[in-house]
Amino acid sequence: MTRLLPAAVAAAVLAASPAAAQPPAAPPVSIPADGTEVFRYLLHKRGVKPLKAAELAKLGDSSHLGRVIVIVIGQPERSGLTGGTAADWGGRAIRRGGAALIAGDTYHAFDPPYAQPLVPGGQNWRYAFFGRRLTNRDPDRVYADNPNCPLAVPWPRPARSPDGPEWGLFDGLTRVATNRPSFLQLPALTDEFQSALAGFPPGTWLDRNRFNVADRSYPLAVGGSGPQPEGGESYRFLAVADPDVFTNEMMIPLPGVEPSDNLEFARRVVSFLVEEGGEDRRTRCLFVQNGKVIERFDALESVINPPPPPLPIPALGQLQEKLVDAGNQILDKLQENDALNRGLLPGDEDRRAATVRKVAEYLLVVAAVWAAIMVVRRVWGARHPADLPPPPPAGRPPVREGTRPAGVFDRRQKELLRRDDLAEPVRAVIREMFRAAGAPADAGPRLPQVRVAGAVGRPDTLLAALEELWKVAYDRPARVTARRWAALEPLFVRAKQAHADGKWAFTWYDPDPT
Image 1 (cartoon, one colour):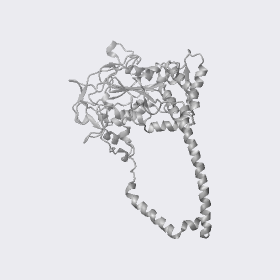
Image 2: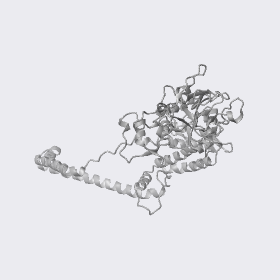
Image 3: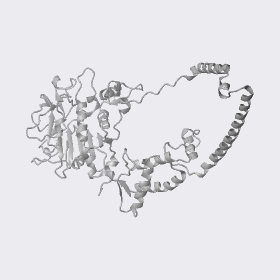
Image 4: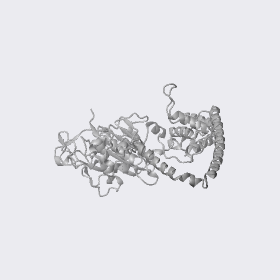
């Protein structure tokens, strides 16, 4: 059974201020100790969005992979993805100028598209996670007095090594904790495996033989960055021979134990992979944990930033008697002083009576005219909806007739029909269509770049329809009458069917943007 940790503890660690770290009053939420919710929340806070497997397939091997981060936690050879394992997709990303983090402790060889060492020896000399576990019996060199958790030791930069950003990942960190780690087989320092960053403390054992920590061919972490020799694209790469470095239990402090540096290390890794600035900023991430694609990064958002409690409703029933008494006292005072009559109708009583009759006659005429107008509007409103087409479905799931009485949504639809303004459901259903087609979350009033398939006979007509629909969905809100929707509906149906048939797509998902 997977051990659970209180999510409120993770909230206290990640929150920026003590006030924000208070857990919500809702029932306590737990997270798995071997999960990656904390690490994924760091990605979420940096604005990195999850990438689905279907979206990755659309990208293919295009240059858009340069904007993608591939993170593989545990068992790199497992993957339900088409076109290769998750580790293979990481290699393709860095070849296109993207970024990749591969963390595993079972045997895994880095085959092409990763760089291959130009050394003799065959398969035994490939870059690989060795797959055998390490321990250390020295309590001063392990985390939480656990011999299976040796602390990582940052290695000094070689004198002639390029000063890449990967060297800042371990700088000053002396308590990056591992959990039954393995190590990397490193035949040579080249390409993305150019920098051996950290190893293990003295006294670390491999099975029953003492591990030679002075040998740089067996590190915990290896990284690389810079332009690719093939195309010159800037990439970022990190391989760590222990996936547990990024799990919840290694980042959340244990009671009575000196905290680890894993949370700070994870923050640095996120910044390293994102590479903010210029056109190389990466905002999409394929996150694969033990062969499963994770498509949610904000699982801790409701715990760390809980919604504000509802405002208290004043107990008006308890104040009713006091309000009535105060009102009666004011009215009695005005009546005693005859303030209203003397203020509105000055003069003697006969003059005031004549004035009152004239005012009453005028009010009766106004009331009669108003009543006639309301009757006409009511009759017209009762007949008008029969001539309108139904608004597009949006905002609620269908309900079978007779399962429940008419509610808020039914009254809302009748109100839209009565006002002859379908803007709200029309914008919702068109936006849903564009989002399903891959529209960016921060879409503006201008249609993103679209590529139309060569099989389309009149691409200008299709683009004009897409621009018209995009304007209705994302431009400044404007009234959409029933007649307007009757003209837009055929465009919407054809555009949606054309995307389903592969006749158009946003260039972000186009595997061949040329």
